[in-house]
Length: 116
Image (tube, rainbow, N blue to C red; front, top):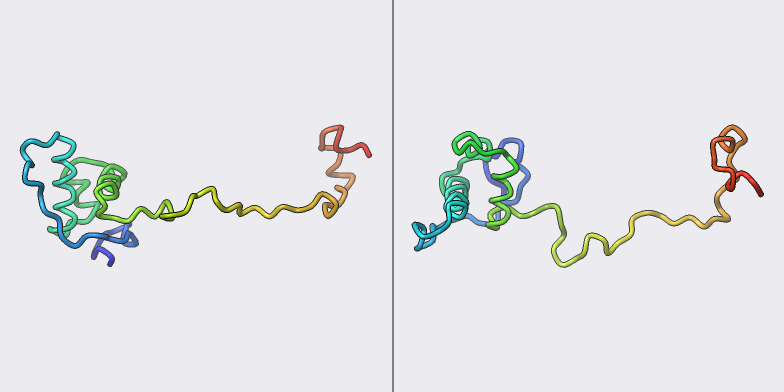
């Protein structure tokens, strides 16, 4: 489900369609209260990230970070269940397939690479 009118971040996947304030809201730290307000504005009131940023004098990064940590938005930076480093994407080329560099290029290579 995509959040309607989310401006530059309209491709974020919203994971929650309803947000409820905690029962002990008054006892929460100021950061936790702010996170609850951001989530309520985004989920229940339909505010965009840009509107929340302007209302609470925050930057985009902080608003989005709060929404990700509260599991309102799905974090696109990682694939859940898999390590980012699990798959090597570079192709390894055997040394015998690599051609000898041209004379114009070889003069810029270190000395040990030029000698055969």
